[in-house]
Length: 424
Image (cartoon, rainbow, N blue to C red):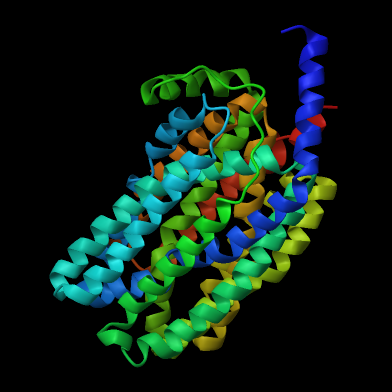
């Protein structure tokens, strides 16, 4: 394609994006409000780990279940990239994958209502693995769609607004779920009732996505199988050294997730783990990112997402340090607040940084590469965390997390450039 013709098509594409920005921004924010709320109820380090521990009585089984969820996510981002990388429009695929992921939440609810404890445990673990599998594909598709319809200089504040509404909604729903659904064993099983509520809210979020206006992509990759996509990853890292360093830092930082299934179990050694306390801690976990992510988003739009990622990773490390000194409910509340301040901004900045490195046609491939690496470590981490607890204690687990995240922080600070500066 001649250069002037390409520039004309690019200009026309950007005008189309700007013309429909208000509509797409509202869709993205409402999707965050509903879609993220449903998923956050499952991903919070409270309800699912507590339910798994209630069913199994084993910390190792809790870690294994979360590990299998991440295992399902290892190759599925590559499958997601192969499904959408060649498509000029990806909205339909995004909707299908999002619904398939949320059907696993419905399956978890039905297992809790209909099966005995041991069979419910097996079913919930299987559904978590399937949810991880579909989530890997859905995240690649949804983030690629967001990259198409939201300009780079508006993604931070829109992501912050998504997080604000999702956090407020999640916080209210979480406290209600813990203090009411679990306390009174609603419908005979409080945890299964939470999963059913999460499914209804989450599927509403996917319905909102259907109203996205998606422009026809100018450039796409040639159609590739999952194996082809996997073979492209080494060359992607080799040809883009800045992204390769970010890739290493993001993967190492993911080792912080090895402790996540065990926060609430550690809390149970320091305080009473009632439904009300579960709801309160989940509320704090949900609501703190809601307000601070607006700040992180504005800072990212002005200064870049790298500075946000560095700041939030440092706060994440400090939260693990603070956890070493927790002895009561107030200490756990402070920890969950500090984690909320850090982790929401860390995930938000990390996702947006992926979109900014390299060329636009390689966005699905970069998302798949990072998703696969993070999921691989996410699969190893909880099992490793469970093994540390078998042979040592919670404090050793938290210290190992801090050391690995400290290495990731050093790589980010000293080797990873701000991608916006590379384009100047």
